[in-house]
Length: 408
Image (cartoon, rainbow, N blue to C red; front, side, top):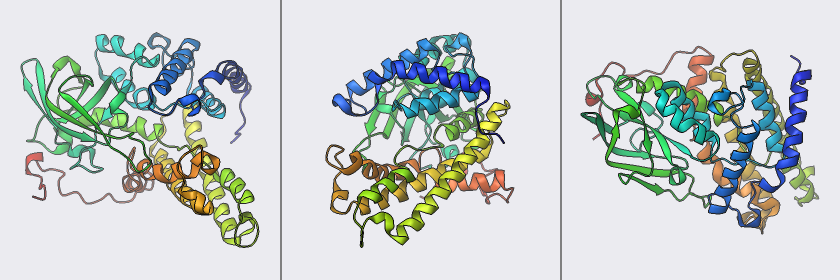
């Protein structure tokens, strides 16, 4: 395979790079000038950047023009994302909404709903979250116990979701609920979109080890939603969720943070047992492992790009990326913090080496290993759908949800 850009792709990359160089400087997503993640200043900067991209045709590049996109192809989207990352503009507020939620709305909502929500989301005016995981469900999305009971043209929803990223600043969300307990768990669910500002929705941020609160608990107490807010048919929630989950695998397949080049630079500048740490044989062996894994991950992503360039939908092999990236991020973060010795305990970017890059990686990586499917879930997907191995034994496959043991 030729990994070089075609003439058309090279021209697109050049035009994207020129636009970014002309517009990105004032929109850097770092914590400079008091703009720390989730602060009002950071949010305002993110929305301004998203609006500017939308106006220039660089937001949702593959979406049809009538929905605010550019009508481009997936490779153009990959190219722009690569160039955007290089200039240091990387806001995460819109990833879930534009990568998972709004595409689900576009696929299953009525025309009125699509007209109302798609445009504002593309421009960054409204932010969406995904409400799937529950305390009693673990990684089993189909184990949802949040109930929706029909009341005329409305549904009344009660229950709890957890690990919802960004719920505290989101305007809307897509919610998977249980509408029928008399059928097996995958057949009794329904999907809705909801207003996150409704008084019946309570969001409780979860304080994380990293010091941030990206994840949240969300409670619903007699939340009333109209039947017109339903996405897909009653009882078809699992089919709708699969569309969202497939997009999620792609959206969280990578990771940010220091790579093997960064830790190699740190090792050059850090004293080891005898001289610079870069001369330590054990470290060099680890560095080689990280390099090989990074190259393998890069070429696996090229396979995804190849599928996109051919108009194909990437398959379950996309799950490989997150397993490798998240685990390497955690391992490298741990190694970097230990290498910094006493400075490794500093988490303040203004005080720690490399702006606390390794500290943040170490503390954030466990969350990344859960988000978008745990390591164990993704390994099952690879085993069953990529390698063709026998599936796990399931004793609840044909059992009505109300009869599934709860452990009580």
